Structures are given as C-alpha cells and as structure tokens.
Amino acid sequence: MDEAMASHIGNVTEYSDILRRHLVPCKIMWSHLVTLEEGTLIGTYQRGFILNVTKSLASSDLFLLNNGVPVIFPDLYNSDWLVVHGIGDILLDTTITEESVQHAESSSSKFDHHHHKNHHHHHDRAYNPAEHSHFSAFH
Image (cartoon, rainbow, N blue to C red; front, top):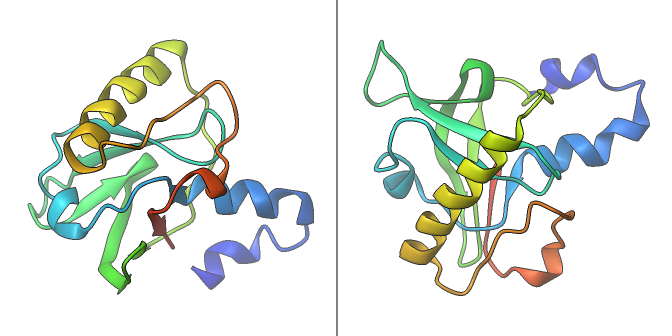
C-alpha cells in the first residue's frame, strides 16, 4: 500500500477522501465477506463512493473490490469494533450512477439488516464515524 500511496503524497487535500474510501460503517469479517453475492455494493464513508465486491475468476478464495483491487490479507486485524483487510492497491475514486447508489443502498440495507440491525446507510450525506460503533477498513 505504501507504494500505491506514493503517487498521492503531494496532494494533501486527497488524504481524507482516500481514507473515507477505505472505510465502511459496519464490521465485515472475512467469513461474512466470502458469503456476499457477486456484485454486492457496499457504501463507504466517502459520499457516493461504493465498493463493488466480486469474486476472482482465478480463485474462489480471492475477493476483489473496485477495479479489480484484491483482498490479499483478510482479517489482518480484528477487535470488538474493527476489522482490517489488507488490499493490493489503493481504491481510486470512480464515477458512479444514481442507479448504483440505489443498488448499494438496497444491498447495504440487506447486509446491515442481517448483520447489524441498528445501522443505516445514508448516501445523501457524508458518514459520521461517531454514529457507528463497528467498522471495516480495507488497507
């Protein structure tokens, strides 16, 4: 990840956006991540940025996020309120459509209802970490 961040070092204004793209407002353990359906969309703390979860064609054990970024170290860190998954590259900002936002809200609602009944996603405003007690970080 350090090499991936090297190209962004000069642009300090991007740091908070980069961080928010790598955080989701619910704790998703590897054991839950592997059960998600192909194409599941998960909202992040970056307003309008959505993770698209897909399985690798090469290996059923490898999960990919936006633009083919692989999860290479699942459950790298785990506590009562946080899980960190190591990924192979930085998650770059991509253009989204209103349809993908609506799909993410629907997918996230199903995921949250099943795993965290008291968490709700609001894509019309930035997420406030103080509103949530469980997180996942893709680093």
